[in-house]
Length: 333
Image (tube, one colour):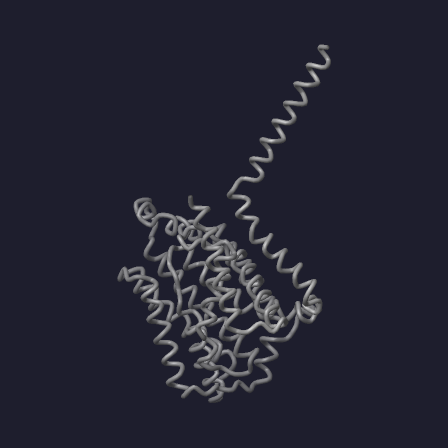
């Protein structure tokens, strides 16, 4: 009888321990964190059923190449959003940077000079955005929307809506060739993710950035130079816009104002939000944003293969953004 009681108590204890473990392992927050993986699993399962050619090795490499440019811009957006801001001008600045670089290359400029021009144009635009937001205390949405309009208008004005060709085989070779059978754009993205992750997680500036994005007033009281940190995020965003311009102009063999169309903004924001970057600031990582970019590229690629219309694709991406913003809001509660 005593043995039975002991066995019963032991069984009850194990049952309670199991229930406690399940509660801790599957909290609402953790379930929300796992939701993107669940959605991706559903998407991949549907693709396996309806688009078996999606898993062709050539298509997979193509997806990662496409995601490399989106991922780079998403890293820049992540820096801004973690700091509590928003940068809608990234695609337009990227297009303008590509145009200036392509025009210099067309005029006989060296590859190095042309690439530096693209990076400088991006960083200058970032400086303007950063100064207006950090020091003039202007609203990020308004400032970057204005910059988007200025950059887009300038790109159309100086090109007359005509593409600027890039005809330089050496440039193509430097940017697009493979290393160990991996296209360089993918390697560039990987290197930038590693550097950005170390900067975000392992440096004092990274800790300042998260503190500024979480609560700017508290960060200022703690002695953190919030204005300089916020300014730096927009400069970094401009840098990644310029870097993306280099890769895209090589991939497409031309630069045009159309590179920065409105749909690209949607893709960048989607990538960041899907990757776990909070629209409220203080939360997010470069790796998450790049994974979000890959996720969005998978969706775009699969819709193309299923011949889904462009406008239907925009609706789906809009729904994705709303869904993940809702998840982010639930996490905040």
